[in-house]
Image (cartoon, rainbow, N blue to C red; front, side, top):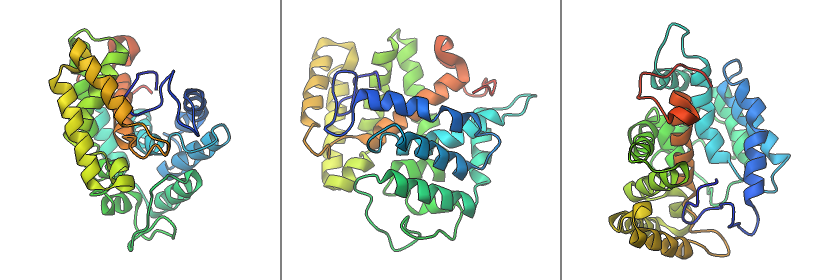
Length: 279
């Protein structure tokens, strides 16, 4: 949240119903739930984190991020002591999801009340799921970036987001600029599903193309690129926050989490396969 990602809340820019401080409080609130992620079911961790957030934040601040980070936290805490990769542990954690996990996650989603959720004919979150959490997510994978990660063992996070962040660090960028660059890389690669739900797929594609233009202008690495970032940020702000690329922000958060898990703040991320499994 400290990085000024275009269209999102940052230290000096708030939405009408949520501030930077709300996001910081939410991050602290989910700590206890994540600390127990290795010992409790995935769905229970998701629900506990969302309920903890609701006690501190006035509106939904982190549902997508909780859904992404909970299986990563569970995986990190269950990497075998003799060694193993975070990615393999993550795949195992998702494969083990149950119908009970889906019920808990559905309850968490209803509690958070995200905007633009809509209704579906199959396994709608307003009802009671009859499939596992991963199977339910797979049904929504084409229309939701978070669900797509569950269905693909976090392919975007491991193959696009985390590598983009590591490349930025390798180029000498500081944390804030590296996060913005990773965010823009993801936004330019896929239409943001949060925008698509609220404003339609055409608007999501338009924003995707604008992000590509910002990267082509140099992004955080050049003065013209930074000017383009500022222009894009202005374009993405409205009273309803409908143009907020929230799904891309969540994917960026997952990428940061993986880099931290695999190397820590100072190490800025080991290569995949070198994770020590410590959360």
